[in-house]
Length: 267
Image (cartoon, rainbow, N blue to C red):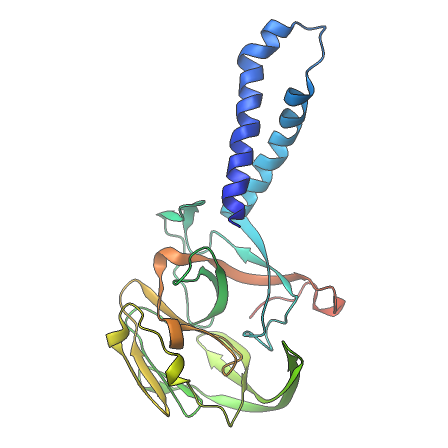
């Protein structure tokens, strides 16, 4: 469901009733007659819907994390807030950028419209900027020929959807200005080549059993999940075009299972 479109239709409907009453109905009704219910309710909801629509469209929007692809940074069930203006002011629904504010930076956690189905919102970490050469081989990430430093941080075990137990190794990685945790399963290939699709600019990537190398085309970004071996990301479905950007995730505002996560910033 396109929530922004639903909100816009409700806003248009309640606003039309408010305007109709203000210009015509109120005058013909007279000061002593009460408003009919079909006027009273839309007029009452109109300012509330307007405020919510403006906040969600231009300032912040809430999202819920549905999968473990960003473990251990984000847990399944985390409710997060996304900054909608940091990457530029965009018109809601059509996502047309009006003007720039900041450009995405390596290491930032981004919400975007899934290239294969823009009705779905995905969340991953920005790894590659336009023009970058991204290499991921033997579980080590390199950008423009420079291998990123990682520091072992122990083991990390969790239960995946379907109650399957996963044993992974945790590392601390520095990507741009962001130091964050990643998970790696040593026995899993760096990329499942059989799962790689035919995506736009596929010719800019080269795959083999050890990993891949991709050159990010202009106006696009390369994103990966922090849970490197349990993430469907740019390795498999390609680059994220600039027009698909929704915003930058910056805060966990709720988690029903762990109240200690409330208020944590997303690095």
